[in-house]
Length: 504
Image 1 (tube, rainbow, N blue to C red):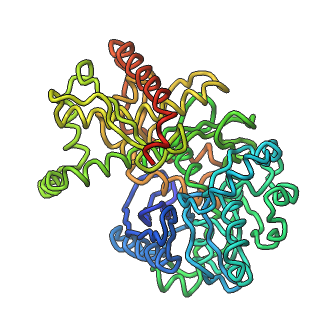
Image 2 (cartoon, rainbow, N blue to C red):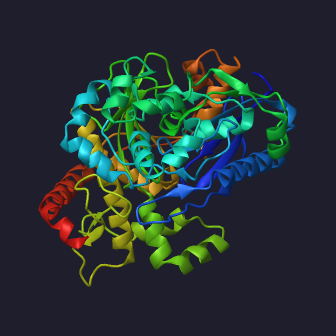
């Protein structure tokens, strides 16, 4: 095995992360820097692009310093990051406005109008995905109407990780997995489609869409300026990288239909790969990094971020005390949950603090609270409600495919054995957790390994670089209990749907 190292960079919604790996996937060091979201208006979410780059560069410097590895031993770099949103730059690669994050809702009226006019149905055979306000098609339409002077300065419309790569290399490219999730191209052909752009009224912006490359294509090398900021060596190869959903799927070794990938993080992602795309029945179909394969996804912002709010609002002192004792927040909550009997708690939690996978105006709530319930019952309800949110997406995927043989779990909540066991018990399928703390960055590093020939292809990279840390078997004695709880969860959702708007 090569003694060279591989650097993966992962830009999510709140943190810029970097991780260094060996050629066989061993995690050598990780580092992260906070990125601050800016909310100038209700429903708007933006990032300062220069600060985002500075946070990324700081993470790279830190990970090299922590690892004790010479930067000259880094064989290649690749980036991943959140999909959609919009990062606009001028001809020199400089930002022309703040980035608009994928959770931004300013363009909701455009999506509603396109849906009412049947535009979504007209383009679906090509785009293979639902429309939503955080996609660049909707954001570009909004900017054209409200900030035309910004488009006048814009040369390129980029995704997050493509912007970071451009800062590393000085070259501008779009990358297929990311761009295939934007409703800007024909997923069948993997090319931008003028008819699709015309349907959204943005055909005149075609020239601002960057040329496309594949994930494992080499897309330049670290420049002298980027080397000075990051601590990398000028000339280090940089691969195309990939959409973060692809990175998590790849680092979970999803290369065939036998598995379902589940990410329990800011978003709840449920996905599988296939050679056959699903056009109409799922939230999003995009091109997978493995050539000839597609990635089918159901997801929403209804996952583990609900726990972060719960702890931050109600138990900050306990969390701080646990941290001081070297205990993670998951260990703290696990202790509470295990004090609660799943057969007696009876509480239902709807995990809609940051979005919904049901009615658009749905909000989070606890149902069934009585004086006998304690902290452990509420914590269990949060755990179970998040899993039921994933189960809602799972049920949609099962309309187009068979039951998977196993689930590969990733994301922050996958660090909680108690939470992952609830996943296994609710789904009645074995759940496996890949080794490592930064699986998105690992997926990017695997891409870098293929780009420079350390591994011949993605399957070889999976065999060499992915290993499992834990496996959870479902408890058949809990199958009926959780089936009944989930049925009750669905029944209350249906009953609440006409009333959600009254709570807005």
